[in-house]
Image 1 (cartoon, rainbow, N blue to C red):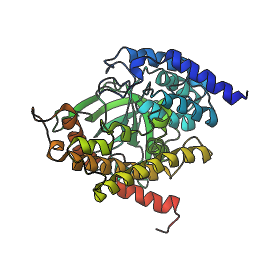
Image 2: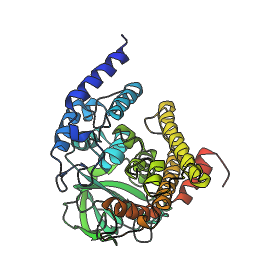
Image 3: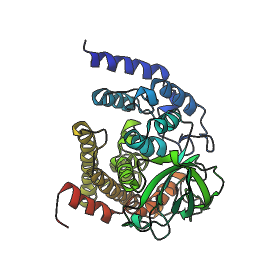
Image 4: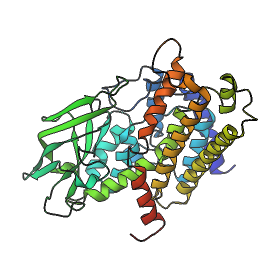
Amino acid sequence: MTDLQTFRQDTRAWLAANCPASMRSPMVPGEEVGGGNKRRSSNPDAYIWLQRMAAKGWTVPTWPAAYGGAGLDKTQFLILLEELQAIQARPPLGGMGVTMLGPTLLEYGTDDQKLRHLPPIARGETAWCQGYSEPGAGSDLASLQTKAEDKGDYYLVNGSKIWTSGADYADWIFCLVRTDKQAPKHEGISFLLFSMDSPGVTTLPIVLLNGQSPFCQTFFDNVQVPKSQLVHKVNQGWSVAKRLLQHERSGLAALASADTAGPLDRIKPELSLPNLARHYGQSNVIEDSALRTSIIGNEMLKRAYLLTQQRTVAESEANTPGAATSIFKYVEAELVKAQLEIQLRIRGTQGLGWEGDNFSAREISMGRLWLESKAISIAGGSNEIQLNIIAKRVLGLPD
């Protein structure tokens, strides 16, 4: 028996013995674990699963053991994914620390920064938020105006950020700030880390139409940030910021947690699309060539997308590909929107309910997701920005 066969057998046996039953079912809203203690999962099993996976280093399996990972190579990593997927295991840990900041610190952080921040992230002890977008600096992120003044031993930060997901539950923020107003806009930006409990940091939730507030506006009023919390070099934060976005857009964090489809999994209907059509009285789905073509085309694109993700990981020299991640971001956004449009077409008016006894909880949930999906081609970098990156960095087309 080869070493890899032994690893697979051992992994399968460990998962069978240690993954709680409730962690082998689709994620229920409110049961996610995103790190920290300000927002807790409603399912106690989630913390049993987190503790066991963290002890194995499998919350961040490819990170070095010194930083809370398991140091798995790519082949072992893919085996772990397959075994997690085989039992439909839930992600033990999510959040921006795992998916975005951690991989970036592994590349750009100092030894002290890695030792301070990475192990708590891997254990689920800290929750992070992203200080990028500002009022007037969204797609043109490099025009940001939040400033950090050099005060000797520390930076003094003033300004605000917007659409700061989970800021009211976060322990720490990774934040882009302007440290040189005279430099070209991409060259005067620095990348700072600081506690959300720092004096001068306040958050204001942005309540949406559905009454929920996943986003905040975050304000900084004379926030003192030690210079030891500068990542990489002063005025060179744009390189760090771009790399972090590649980690976010790669979708590899979803793969690492066995969530093979990421957002695609979360919009999955309660029945297969053909059976969903039959459930809503469209018994002639096989004869409806337009609907049949839409369903088949969407499923084919989804499978091609997931296979391309895995192939790109296997072929890339680094753990996360470069500009190709913009392809993942663009295709996934279009897939999510198209799939929800198909569901709406199948459900008809039953897919448009906002509230009321005439609609099931599932119909209301998916209808709201359909509305929410309209923003997915803007959030995290608009489709137009992704297409520009693909044209220039992947295809090598001239400006």
